[in-house]
Length: 137
Image (cartoon, rainbow, N blue to C red; front, side):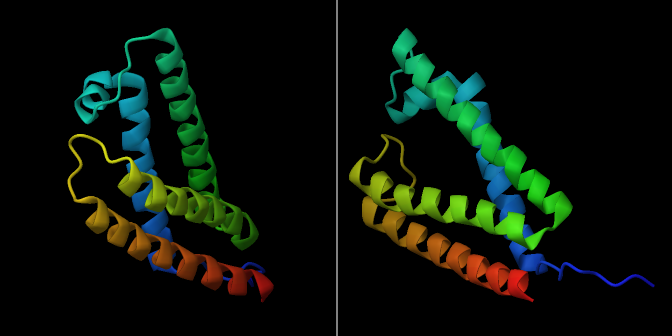
């Protein structure tokens, strides 16, 4: 019987992170391969400078996916903190940006979008606090 030196990350935190990975992978797909979907939101992607920005955004999001998958495999609480912090910062920025600059085919009004992001950020902050406490054990 082996003793673990790294307390277990709660299942709900892993499920939340897996859902976030799937969302980010969908975004990466759109950035790299589905420019029509971006055009439907009102984003012009026909010029070289815009494609540069879109591909850079896709690459950066893909790096977050890789980091997220890595911490889910290792289940290292200290590494998980870094990914959860990235999630909180990204989602907090989206909480402000999305309602201020809504896309053409947004599925919700700006205020509803803001409310959804508040809930998501609250869940992510709770996960961050729990994993931080686990890392201190």
